[in-house]
Length: 434
Image (tube, rainbow, N blue to C red; front, side, top):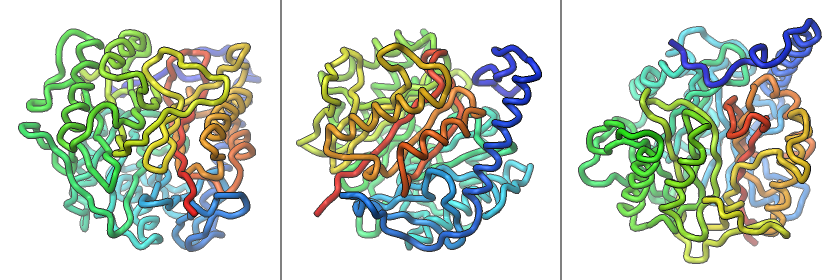
């Protein structure tokens, strides 16, 4: 049976005729926006222009790709290429096969087109994140990816979670990070750990270590530990530490983590266990509700670490340490890793996803400014919506706030840690080089 991540809008709002009309219009808006994004009209690669420092980024898109939505197919900056989440649609249309295998293959073909536009192959991918609309599909998607003709034999760091997707009929969305030619790639795998085909516990590229999602499981057997959220969190964080150690790093090198919780009521107990592994300058973090690729997993933790002795915490002016086990942002390796931020202002959460999106963008912009950066320096973003039918309303505010050219982005539906929060946005920015 499909595991529903959260109740649909009809489950927690009055089902009046006006409500039905409003939701129908939102769905039509989502489809219209996606159609605009898929329309032809952009080819090749283009330097980001128009604002100071923006030439640190370069848009990458295959021929015929439209840029109607506030995200680019990919952004190249420094050593890395950040690819937006791709769906299994035929290029230039919203047409998708009903078969999961066919959608998986088309999704991967769409990503390969973007890689090719930057002169890269799948062998340069170091991190891959898969969102599936049904928790039963994780294994089938992984098998299809491994068995695809011409698929590389290179193991990558991976994350796989269940989420609602923005386009009706979509079964999966995949976002990737690749590294330019000439940068050494090294798989990191602690001794004695169980190996999963196509997946490495970590992948090191230059000064950056991408870790696969770690569950609260024995890494030698894959068995989930007993006792609930606290033991699973400690086990997952211990696993993170073992991967770090195998790469010659430690918890103090973590730049950002993303925590996926099966039940938001576990947030407090998770925080206590998670924070016990970290010092006074913890990594940035986003935390959302999602089911994982193991039915008994209560938590999954996916992290990025950077080898940089000058790593430091960035806070917006007037922001004091909160005592919580995450920082607003971490500056390391020429990048700013920003925590996922929600739309809580001085007077609480405003009504509606549009006003909340504006609060989120204001908070992100203030944090970027504290590092001497702006939205024109952002290379990738992840947007989590408590209901994907908020997609159009969120996008209208996001597009105006972030501006153009926009960063790469993945957008999925997932409950957040409080029912009042309708949107959470996480970003990564690059520091321009002379």
